[in-house]
Image (cartoon, rainbow over all chains, first blue to last red; front, side, top):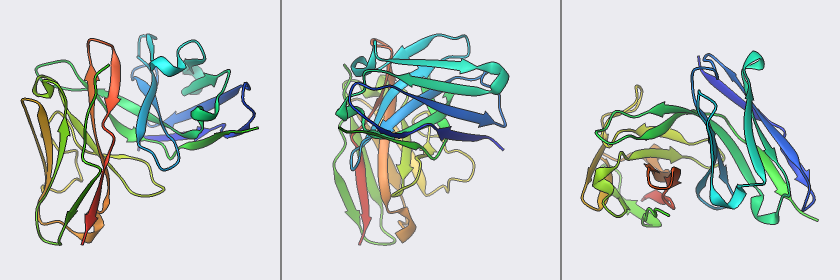
Length: 123
Length: 108
């Protein structure tokens, strides 16, 4: 059974740093790509970051230069290092496993999700 | 950046058909995926690659995609279908993954 478990959330002051972890079981982070998606209280889903199996990384514009996604293959875990945190980064952060779609145009979607970890940025 | 537009809410009586739209420029040229999310829970994939269903998702869920609109159709709606529904695409021009704003489905 494929499972993802996020940890590391909490209350942090503006300007502070936090590292989220996504521990994976049932599949390998070496052979799959994973993403981070966040959801502010009462709001919709917002894609944040993604790391491909080959190690390539991608970020939404609002977190570029502040967030870094990485992985530890030996621990089968993906991380999201978040620096210079702002109030607008407050959200539940989900990690999810990606799948390459099969439409005529390239596409990707997310078939397994963790339960999320809450990050609150507040003075 | 690429924008996906969904109606904030859709209401339907039990047993009827609900249609949730997802608008985007030439979205028909992209693969569209749909998730539902119940309060306090993680999103769940319900349709991928425009029209395919993951195992365990009933055939009451179907999808279509053409022109500037993708549509998720829920037939014979049940009370348990109440949730927020999100569409999602990958935008190749910006290398960004994009979600629609979400649609709250209410079963009357």
